[in-house]
Image (tube, rainbow, N blue to C red; front, top):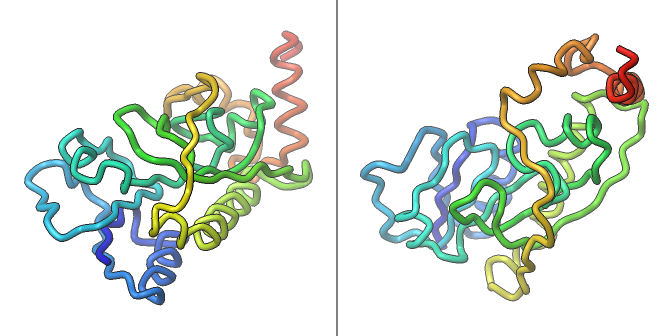
Length: 198
């Protein structure tokens, strides 16, 4: 089996690639935009983790239901950018999801997901790391089903929520210690902001 893996050349991407290679999968790793002139011949799967580009229709049509994405939110909540941050700002479910890729952002059918409860003593950074670890574990647990197409994908049940990178700018003042801001501090400030107190 041969896989196109899309995402930065760092962890957790490298640990997923290592796992695949240990399970007799040949992996070609790309972090740049592959949409123009990329030869798809010979690939069985496409896996995206932290990839920064929209994948075009031609590539998706080639892979059909063999293109998957890792997203650190409990879809359909917090599609798009900064899902961990928004789960606290908007008090929505937290978790991780592996889903099929379609032409909309984080919109495809769900392969597997796990809801998580994060301690308010965690920071944005540490909770992000927890989510990254959990999604890798979820993938490893379900890889055989994904590889053998022995799962039943389920449609996302509602529109949920979606955010762009720039959407967080109006809340940046709440991050008193950047990504090391504690969850309890952030949620308290977000609640006050919602009530017009700050």
